Image (cartoon, rainbow, N blue to C red; front, side, top):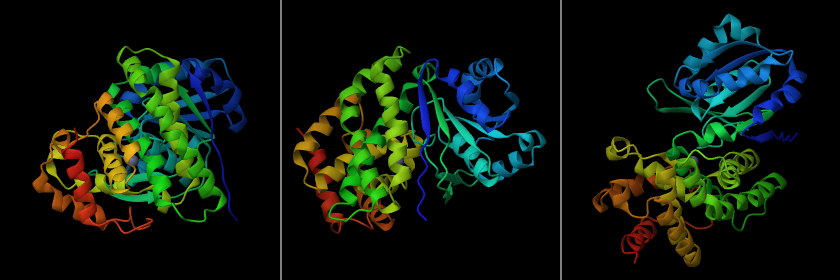
Length: 355
Ligand SMILES: [Zn+2]
């Protein structure tokens, strides 16, 4: 059996109004689980939307911070959470994944409420779990995505801009990695469908990115901002749900993994999507996509995304270790050609000497 489930979504500053038409089909009692700031940003709006319905909120529960098995078990043992017919998952990546995996484990329907647009977690069936110390633990695989995504664009417009900024970098990688990693393959229906959708992860972002970031700075809900939010959450999430692991990653994420061994990456607070966006430039240079490299490089400059090692507080001496780590993972295991350290070094040098 090969099953594909698709989440629905509603976007708008009044998106939560749709709770009353969609959620009552799944029961009446709700446990809302989210990050601290996410709950603060959305609590009143969710409560107001539920008020005029037969639904009742059993409580608002903090996810515990980390998306860890330990926190999921604490929530699972909570008597109020146990009574819920459905789970509302509220936040960015980790809080959503905590509530998502809890819903999977306890076989309950769940709905997502992204309060920032930085990852596609609120659209996907996959849960990413961490140890309590923040290190990666495992991927929690499932084919069950949320039933519906309620995207309140007002709340996202009022969130800090860096989430949107980094989210754009991560989203762009989806297109370049998918189409490079799968080049030359005869794709199954779901891989081919996902790859086709991945084309929505680049052009719209280049078109709307600068204006959307500007609108986020002034906390303005605009069509451009909503296009970008849909790109980061929905386009990317659908691709993730549809394509296999070989296509969902590639050289941009390999570079990210390489950079994570350097202490300065964490010290200066460089974000996942920010580093991945530099990886996209490396991918394009290695792949010889010269025209596209010029176009995306220009876009990165306009967006203030990194285009040189120094933008990530990295020096050329660090490169050997970064490349060794980048090539040691699974990201370019499936690729149309072997990626060598020399290819990456040449790509980085090309970016370093960019005029
Ligand atoms: Zn990523």
